[in-house]
Amino acid sequence: MNAEVISSRKRLGQVGASIFWCFTTAGVVFGYPALKPVLVDSAVYSELCEDGVKYCAASDTRMNFMFTVATVITNGSALAVGSMLDWQGPRSTTIAGAMVFLLGNFLFGVQKVNGVFDTYLIGYSLIALGSVAIFLSQFHLSNAFPQYSGVILAALTGAFDSSSVPYLIYREVFFKLGERPSLRTFFWLYTLLPIAIILQQILAGPKEIYVRTVTPDPFVTLADDDDLDDLARARSPRRVYDGEQPVYTPSADPVASGFSRLSYNMPTNPNGYVDEDENIEILDHGKGDLVVGAMFSKTLKEQLSSDWFWIICAYLFVQMLRTNYYLATVQSQLEYYTDALLADTLTRAFTVLLPLAGIVGIPFVGKLLDTRPTIETSWILLVFGVSFGILTIIPRTVPQLIGIGVLVFNRPLLYTYLSDLFAKVFGFQTFGKVYGLAMTLSGIVGLLLTPFDIFTKDHGGNFTPINIALMIAGFVTNVGLTAKLYFHVRKGRIALPYDDH
Image 1: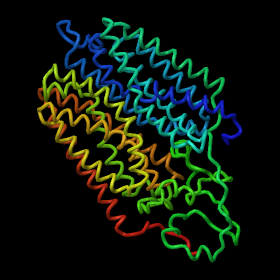
Image 2 (image 1 turned 45 degrees about the horizontal axis):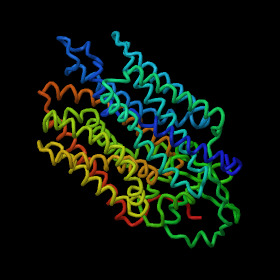
Image 3 (image 1 turned 60 degrees about the horizontal axis):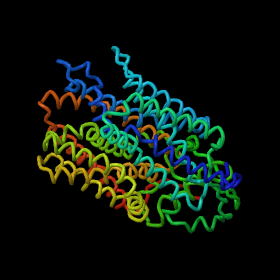
């Protein structure tokens, strides 16, 4: 839907509400490090402990498993939510997400564990699923005001990165007010938020995705096409000409999902198809990044079976494991490498820096990805990854603090870089499916977090073996990806087939 048909006042209200919804729901499950002290103090899973203690290795493993499942769902549901977004539109998807989010908060507040019936696990999982549906349904609002789309997109992303703040605030209030409000009270009060989301969507939410429509290029003659160099030809593999009349033809694959269009603010041509010739400018920004378009002309099957896909996936899997493993175990790791009192201070600093760095880092991340070649970002992430791995296994306060700083700035860069890389390599025609599948597989791989946690506890709480293994795996996959980028760029062209006409 063209945003211009809606009044600017209504669109402004939609954008403002959307940013607030993202801030309070989008990535709230990643506030687990801030919420965990409250869970421990509230004796969550204490029935797994002996001698009537509130907290033990068994309860810690169960809480970490709850977080693991939530991260698996967060990553793994992107493809399904994107499909629903295409099928039902943003309003219905947001309302469905809000209902799931409401149910999740209600069940978490029930606080019942009876065999396999675990309302903490079920509730937290539903919170994760609902938040994904709410978050992805808001991105199209970056097209509500096309001239400010970058600012709106940055605000939505920043809201996601800082959405762990509600649990951070709750933790501070909980301990300052003498363990009040209780977990039940907090999570049941939080059900008012999805109710507000549902009402806002019914009364003022956009029913269809806002898109940016572009005018087709002027007629291009065969003589003009003959003058195109190899790079320009390769970047328009799907455009064909019938005499002097440009004809837009769909790819062999289905058109990109709404998820891909709204995530990258993609223009579509009047016939509804994604024009890679237009979108190449969005991705390349005129900097001659030869990574752009590496797999644009390939079918979905060819893309998914390519070394590009699996090299990037291997890197994605390892980095997600490293990041989420640290988020789940940060307090325990800091206690192991420093001491209990200092670990509490450092953990509190981490829970504050995590959302703050996400907001502060937005302009720097955007500037880096928009102005520098992709391979430079890969090198930066390699340095960050190795630095984080080394610093966080040194049993000293200063290295641990610096390691925390590296992670909180690395995280938003990593997430943005990966989605940006998928779009640059595979294009927009299949982005929703390629990226969605990669994230789904990443979620499944994330189930390894629980065996990692059990292995650590079985070895006296020693985090070093897992940390070193993840650091080595991260180094190998990062070097492999960087090498792939390097040798591709070294060719000096994008190796795509194109028609001679």
